[in-house]
Length: 578
Image 1: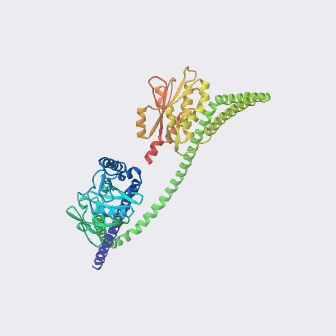
Image 2: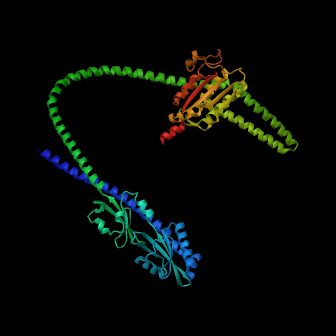
């Protein structure tokens, strides 16, 4: 009984505490959001008024405006003043622009909205007569509202006219209407001058609000809703800007916190009851467990002895398998490197020609330069030295490519431009292709694509495929190899799937159907003995698979052979990550 009373008291305290915490948190969030809205709208309202504050003094200093007041008013002068006022109102976006006589009579009005006399206009004119910038909030019986800025037009020390610019607030109220919070501005008399609630306009604040302690209730339609009233003074305008934050989310948070605490208390009580019940069951079961404990200990001891022996056997087998896997990985890496070196050896004759040709040219240019220097023709000698430099750079680029291809590549997968991959591959296979009379055609669309992989290993794919095609085309007239991006229609589907498909095709004899399924198996080759070991396609297939892609053999309609290299698109991966 005592435990039940303690649990009940603690549950009530928890409900009260959690409900209060949730309510405080919700009230803070609501107040923060309303405060942000208040700050933004204050800056917006001040910015709109600052935009027009300097317009009347500038207009009052213009000669054409002063000329409107320097002559006796006539029909033509009135019309010219009206057109000027309308022009200024249209260009500035003001609600209206009016020209007044020193007595306050309207000389001309751009739109004729504020031509009626009002007490606010009298105070505005009095301030202008004192030589200051006049400002006043104007409201008419028709419901039109504006904030007026006025400046005097003077001839010498005499006041000859007044320029008044009326600033409208329709756009500001339209912007406020997008806010879920009620927003309004009150003047010194407590009258609501601006608001996003049309039914509150030009009403005293006391008519729509009832004072409370932390919140105030405001009449919205036929209901009174409690709000937190956040106020910011606008000293230059002598206005107060109000933003109302609805406190109903606070009440809802309080209710949700109370329900959560009640549910937690209920679950806690159920858990306590379950613990008590289980303890009683444990006391009853403890004796039976003691009886079975000795028997279980004997069984566990025997089973532990057997399991230890089994674990030792399994540990030894796992260690052997790991060693075998390590040896297999090393053998695969050595095999890939051997294939690369074999490809380099296969291309060595053509590459040596690529080196010998620039060396012979360098020798010739050097001898010519020495002869021209001896004759005093340094300009021709300098041209020869420039050509020697170009030949050396060509040989250096080829050497860098060979060294990069011969090194063991890394295993990281990064975005790689296909342009760099294909350039490196073409540098390696180009000399051999030219020697064999095979034309290489590379699709320019591939240069703008990035794929995921490693640059050297991707180059090895295209080197192996191109070398196989050169072997197949040996001795054929008009031999040609194409590296191209699959067609535009398939390109859209590839973008959706995040892949890029590069076709490596030739116009050779092709691959017979009966051996098409075995071309990617290690050590399978159709070449003569001593011409290859049959691992080029297998290595290329393994590299593509390591990068999440694949290589497939296709049968074209017009003969030849087509290998489709499918790689992951770096652009698609980057877009998915974003």
